[in-house]
Image (cartoon, rainbow, N blue to C red; front, top):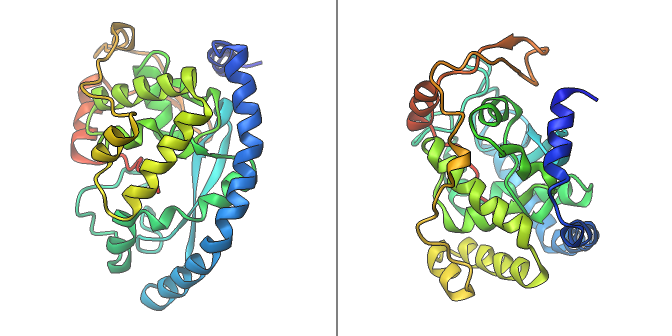
Length: 277
């Protein structure tokens, strides 16, 4: 077992037996729920696929590598909302505000989160759940796991289409915003139950029709105000860090992770799009 796999296993071992049992059972329920949701979802997806083909050249379904349970990488499916080969020149980059790569149709679909509908197939295949931490891209996970202690705990369970962090917090803008999401992801993993899942699903459904997420969270009793960051998540904030990391998409090429200031600068100019449908 590699050191990275060993570290991920240690994070997974932190789950209580009660939570392990809950997530094992809910994974099967989620697959059944995804199958039911695909009944109304398939006609909507088909209509959107046709619109994408009419309005923009290129495939309608876009696949993107994400880090799933136990650090395994899978292909997350979306309806394409950007120009074909949007990252051909830049490589993996986060979505910027008013990103010029987004198509006209994409500017309509993304706020409504309709581009996330194909992820029901990821749930059906057992790669995702309806509720859980949003899966991050391996290129960014390689940075964040080095900068934030305990970051990989969020991979102890299946990633979700929506989650407690997405309901309560805005898109990330710096390392502290990532930490706040990790706080809520950890709370969800440690305390998830059927009632919490139903409340998150209820809030997500209301957000789809345009109601503000924060108000929905208060109504459902899952609002989290002023999320505090525990000190243990900060101790790797070392601008002089010389540890190396391995990029999942760079043939295991090793290089020094960027300093805390450079990561903050990067995140300040781009958005990590971790919203949910």
